Image 1 (spheres, rainbow, N blue to C red):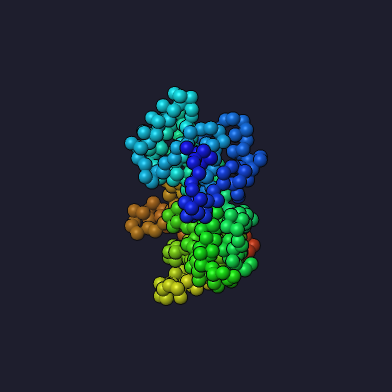
Image 2 (image 1 turned 90 degrees about the vertical axis):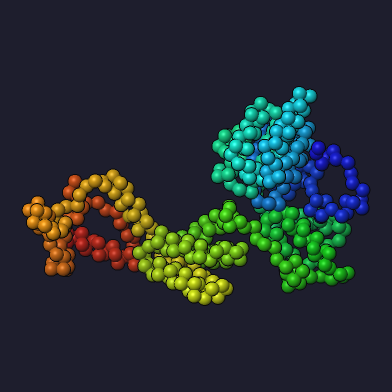
Length: 435
């Protein structure tokens, strides 16, 4: 049954409910922070106007209104509302829900089935939704905090539209606080700096900002106003939204990598410290920075790899938290280093050539001839020892004869690779002159 038609609780009971629950929106228009979905021109608003509601997957972080919007949809479309969670449900529970929805449909009413944490169902359980979605028994609304592309069956995704819920920004969180103040009939006892800190601590979670506000009201004495330090003491700190095995983990390491590649040391340091603060394994961050050093810097600054490996050794030696400063130093170093993916590109090109020409033998003149038979076959004939040649360069061809010369490594005019480019151009000139 939708909240819109639920009997009202006695006032004393309602007052005991958490603030976030008491302020739950009663219409789509009251939903904050998701105007692209629930605003006058939002996707869901247009669906309701058209009188046609299809199955959907709501994807977004916690506290963005996924459950609330699903309940409101059922109320505004007249669909029966059923809710379950993949954490507590199995096939038997789903079968009961499907049977009830079929019976309801025989009476002329369709069911909106809201499934929280739908990504936690295994593949077979996800497949069980397909028949009842196809025959119109249910309109499925699944909610997930994880990327549906990775966590949900392709067959399920092909039958449902994915709608993205955005984290709250400071504007929408401030709107929630103002609603809370109007509901409580009193201002939040925080100065401006503390109020902004509370908004940031919520980390885009609407439920969290109201919970934090409720904690502040509980702690405040009459005529007391808290500053930032008082706020941190009262609410301690809220753990960042971060799961080391899921999207938060991959999103932040991707952001760190992009910031380093983009030569932004400030943003790079921000993402590094944010991951450390959330409890990320420092050695994982060391490994990723080593990868950045070889992928995005390479020989433009050969010291980048040395610095990243040294940071790993320093962390091993010092431990936490002292060793984390070495990670910060490495992070700033690679962010400010000249960038080049020439080694990365050369490696990929050479690997393709190796796969295409893997059966070709090297030219005989560069092969050793440890036996008379091999010497008789021409192994080693014509090989010129580079150290005996002018400039210690013979200009010989080392590629397989049928393959011909190839160019994989093309250093840019940046950093140390500018010097390497000069050397390669010089050797190319000598190779041409000496045939």
